[in-house]
Amino acid sequence: MPVCKVCENDVEALITVKVGGKAKKLCEDCVDRAREEGEVAEAAEGVMQGMMEYKGRR
Image 1 (spheres, helix red, strand yellow):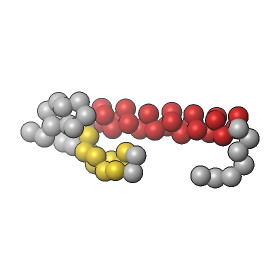
Image 2 (cartoon, one colour):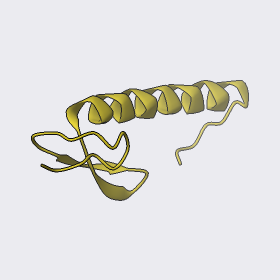
Image 3 (cartoon, one colour):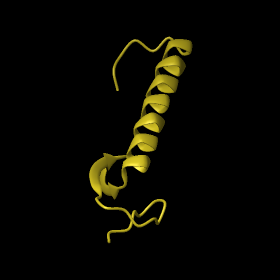
Image 4 (cartoon, one colour):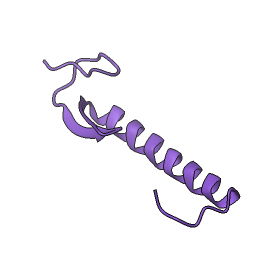
């Protein structure tokens, strides 16, 4: 059985996703968690750019 690199649990299948520019093989729960963390980080960056009155793009 494959093992998730993040939570180290035995799972039926691993899903390959890009996290921070690197491909990682994660279980479904960790994929959902990584997606939520990415969305929160993106929203926080948008708020910070708004506070700093940043007009450009990254």
